[in-house]
Length: 293
Image (cartoon, rainbow, N blue to C red; front, side):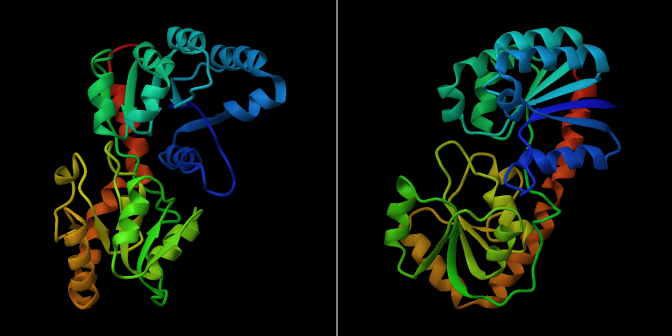
């Protein structure tokens, strides 16, 4: 299949589009990555839009996948969807979609829509029946267990804001907060931690939960919508309900290393179906399932 993947790509592993592009290629597809932001900086947004539409016209792609693309005019989505099959991939929570109403309209224009968050799906399916939940998952090329000595009892990898900072301040055990850990650095820091914390938002879990388990880490998290469909509490990970239970479970699992390690091992096995290859395969399979061009 000839695929045009419109997104943001880099060489440092910060953009998930880079590993998603490689996943499409690993499945044997002919894929062209189009960095729509970089192209706009090089030739201007109007010329970029004309170039993108011309490229689709000339290359006869079987599928165009837009990754969020909130800076693209709606006319571009409309024109390209008239030429070939299109998919809009949206990885962010519902709050971000609500901040970009133009993307909600774009989701109604494409042949099918895929998203990482169930609450986003619940909104978009109202205007595009061909809307599907596809887990973003993790990059198997960099997220894997490392043989590293434990340095931290408890860690949180990410940025502190809102209720996260309040929770961290109320954790009895010292928490190592690690920001700006991307690519291999993320899994390295998971390996250094006995307990890896996750704090969900009201809109669902981030890819942090998949990356931690894929790196062989022990995940201690609050719950999120759709978790029970994929992971079992106290088998693949451990769920806490409030700050009191969070502190109790940190204390318990720091003192029960064998049980902690067994849960981490089962988490590693359970998360394997959510790697980037699976993500790409789901996008392709849905393109065949959706009626249209």
